[in-house]
Length: 99
Image (cartoon, rainbow, N blue to C red; front, side, top):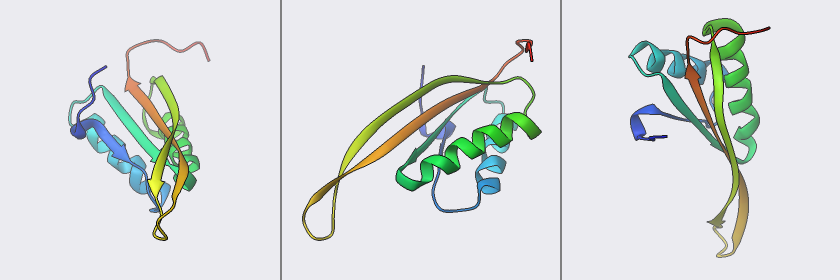
């Protein structure tokens, strides 16, 4: 699975539709696979983005891989804290769905 910065959508605090539009733009540019990355409170927004894409915008959207993890980040006070992360790899395929 090749991952470059061109096929990654980083989820932050913006509305979900902003990230959905970013994914649609990447698919329309010819990419067949996109990685959606989020951490902390943005994880639920990443899941919402994938669900909305699959239900309303991209036919035959498949979730190819989901990776979860934890990153240790520096705090302003000098301490360290752990933050949950998720990487969701989605693809646009020609597979027929049984739903």
